[in-house]
Image (tube, rainbow, N blue to C red):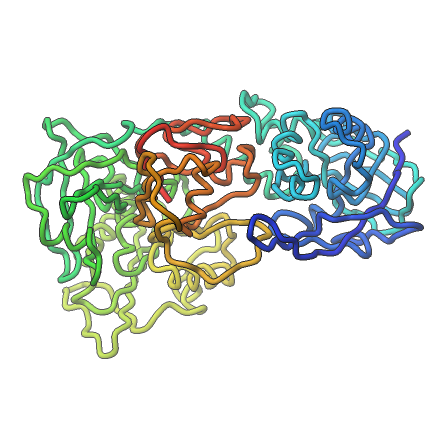
Amino acid sequence: MATLLSVNVGTPEDVSWQGRTVRTGAWKSPVRGARTVRRLNVDGDGQGDLAGHGGEMRAVLVYQLQSYRYWREQLGRDDLTFGMFGENFTVDGLADDDVCIGDRYRIGEAEFEVTQPRVTCYRVGMRLGEPAMASLLVAHNRPGFYLRVLTEGRVEAGDEITLVRRGPEELSVADTDALLYLPGRDPARLRRALNIPALSPGWQTSFRELAAAREQEEDPAWQGFRPVRVARIVPETPAVSSIYLDSTDGTPLPRARPGQYLSLRLATDGTAPTVRSYSLSSAPGAGTYRISVKREAHGQVSGYLHTGLRPGDLVDIASPRGTFVLEAGTGPVLLVSAGIGATPVLAMLHQLAAARDTRQVWWIHTARDRARHVFADEAHALVAQLPHGHERIHYTAAGAAPDPRPGGPRIRYGRMTADSPAEMGIPRDADAYLCGPAAFMDALDAVLRGYGLAAERIHTEAFGALPALNPGVTPTAAVRPHQPAGSPAGGPPVTFARSGITTPWSPARASLLELAEACDVPARWSCRTGVCHTCVTLLLAGDVTYAPAPLEPPDAGSVLTCCSRPAGEVVLDL
């Protein structure tokens, strides 16, 4: 019979770590007597980062006495006391390879359901003073697990733990954890995991993405950069020009997925080449590529593309990349853009029009006025080819003139509002693709969620660097990416393409992630030990080495920045 040995609680506190302040509830201590377990946590307990911990599906974290004994031996530690792994319940029994997702247990007055393994996170390493702990928990199949509270009630140390019902697929916590984080995953086991209603929504989403990736597994058409020839340059508006690119040998360029982008490497002033990324705006199967570039007031590269580039010139490009792509389906599609953000969704519109797709499709674009309305005629003609196409245009400039085209779309003046989706009759099961300035996408995301679209149906593509993801770290004022402090190092150049930074590598740094942080390049990470793949980044050129080796290598053409170093010159999509 399993037994509850200790109830542990702790409230969030600020902890200093590597020059940052981390808000965390990982410091938990045993309590005496009974405690009431409620829907969101144990009385007296709290979580510092609710995005990764806590909430209804992760109300109580469980860890086992047997794992404590294991780690005391493995780590040579005699100071591991209950609560140090961040758990609320320390138990005797309930091993990770025996407990299954969906199992229900009664402890004291309360009833619980197992929802997911522990999320790997750097904070357990902080708490134990073992930086690699997140990786070790997964590699040694000892993650621990979360419980949902089905019936609130009082529990205390010494309570027996009774199995009420076995999970429907009998998939253990250890197997579920390995299915997400370790290589060699079994497709049949993946399908079983998706059949468990108790599995938390976050893990269900991850497993659906893994299943979809297996069906769509594609390596980049080529590695690194290759030269292509500028075929022609066509002005679209006074500030936007389209650049058409052909192969140098006359063969069709590989097909891109609608919504992907190209990274260009250009020597604009005779110095080191600069890398910039631009969405493809052409039909995916055209055999050529088209990018459409807005000239920015102080943009060195965009200025060169508008004034220095000529037909016949050669430019280096990386293979089409990106996950902001039109997904196959039969449901309604919503393509929403502002300004030059029209480029990736225009490629999606080309794909839909070429197939005469029978889905309901809405094309919604916001521009300052008709003179700055990019692709106005092209998009209008494409929408007309769709059996169920709808078009809506917003002009935001005061006194903007109406669209002069006979039969053109009716122009709305001002931006979309919370009432716009209902006014347009947009179905709440539509898949929405948004691209434009960050403020535009944030506002539209809020409008669509408020209208009833599920978050997983709203896809966005950001200009420039992706927002940072540093769980638990107290936010600080944003700093523009820059060269790292100190004297220049002598290592190979590392380019952060989205941020426009090229800097020499220093062997004194532990990882590419550390270099990005030194440059204030927005970076995304969680475990910092090569487990969770939160830091996975497209590797546009070059190669890397790993230390420590990740538990599962990333896909070809990608890199885990948290545990990698450059093997030579590299270009990263950061």
